[in-house]
Image (cartoon, rainbow, N blue to C red):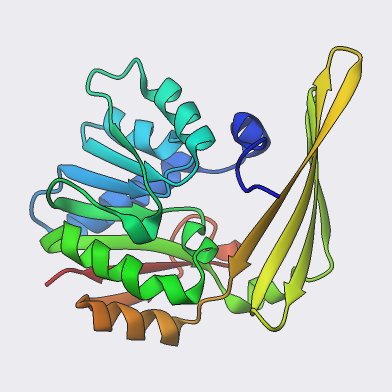
Length: 241
């Protein structure tokens, strides 16, 4: 089963409760706290590009990267009317390849949990390569406690034209949560069913610190002061020396 294929065109409708403005404000607060110029930003695993477009509208030059062509198509359409459209690149995180450095990179909404542990060293190595000295890397992950508590739970998201049923099962061997999704979309008087499978891997603070330091990042902070932190979202802020 695919990941972010059929779901892409319905993603925004099913995630209307995501506080994107709060995420944008959080990143800007970190930029201000760090000091210096933050103008060119990377949105890694940008999805449908809501945050990309929002940060571009706030005056930043944006590069947006995602591995899903379907999600990038949604993102490009969303940003088409911006005075300075972002540069969109179809790349997986571990194959990130930019034309130069950025002032900061962010990766939102637990996208980092989608990366298996064996890929993280290369992802962080490439981020270290493409974030300028003195720049920032900011991302969030779900805490291990929050993720393991999802085991066996079933969730429903719906509106008049789409119904999404998803089940969370903990895979002990992989230390990951596997989400099986059934998507029902209205086609006139009928409903069309499609399926997706998503896997989110649990990444401990100890592992993340070890890998970030090995990649060359410093001043690594784990913070519970960002959007949705009360719902198991942990923020990681690291500096590229």
